Amino acid sequence: DTDARWTVKFSKARPGPDGKPQIDIAVPHFGYKSHISIDRRHGLIRRGKTTDAAAHDGARLREGLIDPNNTASDVWADTAYRSMENERYLANIGRVSRIHRRKPPGRPMPRHHARANATKSAVRAHVEHPFAYQKGVMGLVIRTIGMARASAAVTLVNMAYNMKRWCWLDRRAAPA
Image (cartoon, rainbow, N blue to C red):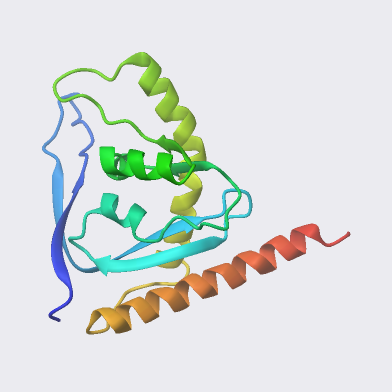
């Protein structure tokens, strides 16, 4: 596949039985990545983008993930999306950045940033639910060749997730 790329995902290893930190785990991945923006209130996927696995997340924010028809002004995202360009972009389109702050290298996170990140995590965690559902229940594995086919597969899975989510929301709203 000439469009797919390699990337390495790092995972924090749990402390050993003696309490000493273990070596972090690096897992190589080959393929594609799905970037989504969701409706905070209902959990529906509003926008999606498929890239190769090595593409940096931060640049995707300025490539159409923000829905201009969305009336919410806050943008919640993890630290991969924090950059000066993204902060300027959000300010220029009238959005409020609620993007996680990075921990300063070699120093502990300032308390006020840690508290703010904890608050942001409660909202941002809702974005992880569609990914977990798509990988787990739906068994999403991209086995196509080429960006166009991978993008089509991810788009179809996003649509199927939205239909499942819509049915759940509809059942919840029905009178008993």
